[in-house]
Length: 364
Image (cartoon, rainbow, N blue to C red):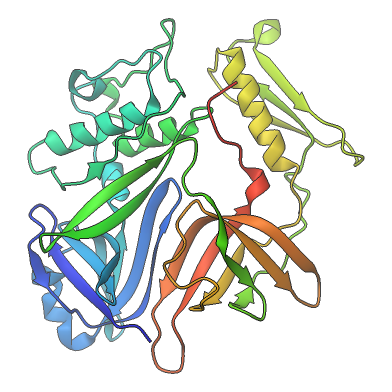
């Protein structure tokens, strides 16, 4: 079983407060285009450390496995519960949900016309960290894309009087047709944690032929294959800007030999026909898929050692149970490691979606 350390550090300086904080019931991991999460408990005898080493809203919590940093985030809650102190933290992306645009257009960086959403993401982080006491030292990589946001008739802007949450702006950039994805990464740099926002375009991750998850090999638990047609459709109608007869509309449909099912997606305010058509196609592809495994629990194994995969990777998932024989390429959308303790061995809980639910690249 690999050794773990739980380290706390000052949010603004990175100065380490505790090198080995005893914790139990730990679960942590990153996510696709969302902040990762951590939960755990501090022993009762260490409760006095709340203000000095587990200071909610001002402290990094880092997870190290066998000398390698696996996760890092900000502690947002430290609550006594029974005889233990329950700690909750979230990745650096969560910080932007607590920050707002108080100057308008991120202090003059916008408005944006035919802008790369990757640039907007970098601008938002730069604006957040240039404000007094707002610099977490987070680095956003230099990825660029062919996606675009804003037009001369309808530029993308941020008005100071609305004080939009910066996290909502990041969500807008991910939602752009053919837009980028992001996740969080961490590594040591001169004995201090270096937090990075990894931006991916046309996608994060890659198809992995060197690892796999399979019942009887490294999968020890799995969610049963779900067959749910409530959201299924081969015909998607995307509705955009306008009213009545003037409302913009795009329909994407295929015939696959099954009963016709339709779904309407409201893309309120969308004026571009190409982006509306791209949204309809993306929704249709995703909604054609029925039957998938959504979560697996795996053990450390040479077929896929813990930490060998990344958010966004496509990995072959093979599940055999009393209900089905399932074999499909599945995309990792988030995962959480549970360090071993007592009789329970180290394991990872992985959330996956069928890889054929996803489309990548710029809007058509």
